Image 1 (cartoon, rainbow, N blue to C red):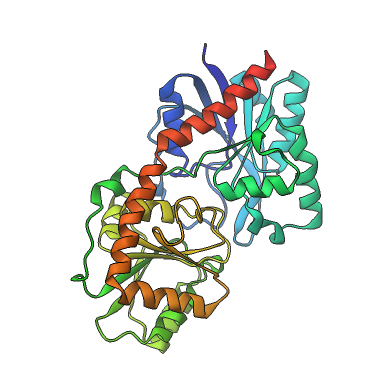
Image 2: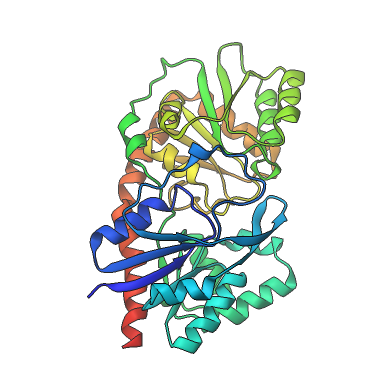
Length: 373
């Protein structure tokens, strides 16, 4: 009999859909995904940003939410206990350390149901947490049966909390990569200007002002390189004004429908992800699948897993303007380096197939379930 598993993510997002759908297809685990809310305050994504394809049982609760600048809001979901009773799970997988995890923990203790915790947090997350939050994490960690983390850096963070790495499975943050693999192409020196792409919301964490300033400091000749920003957000006006003042050739693409995004990657040569905070950085995984060279912040969970220094990426300290400038100069002016990093992106993507990530999640669930018997 398949193991019934209740999974409690905050909201529906496209980069978890392939994991849940494939988990259901494999048949060893029957996932019932209980979203705490249908969306979150501050999102400026149009309704067609994500349409779930199905393939797994799902339920969407309503939640009271408190905004937190640049972060997932604090959520208090209504009807979580009733949803768990309807699911009748053999295992519960909650997300991070907030109220839903604490409520699920109480339910699991009462019903003697194993609980796992899935987390995107990395060691870079800890300086942003309060002493009270860190204390809570240390209290929760030994009280769950195991963990699923979305990057290798997540293992290191849990090690710092005293968690035995044998209790942790790494399921690298998933994404629907097939459309990006389909548009991957060979890139050569002949493509000019070199197009540097960023993908994400125009918010402070993305550090895009520093990227524009570094681009200006490179002194690229006319037609040598251009910068393209794909996304919307509250900083668009400020970033436009900065680019105009510095004379940087920036194209603001705004919002693109999901079906349009792979072609935008295909038309680029480099992805720049220079965020000061980035729990994972799904854009890095998409760009690697599309065969782009990467400039990636060392603070992204993707760094070390799908953005590998010297193989497909130049990893940078996002607080160091000179490091961003030097990486831009190298990748724009050295066509051989771009070609090597591009080939490396294809190799890195082959090393991290979705199936391996699904198997890691499945292993964690089955191991927890076997402990219940």
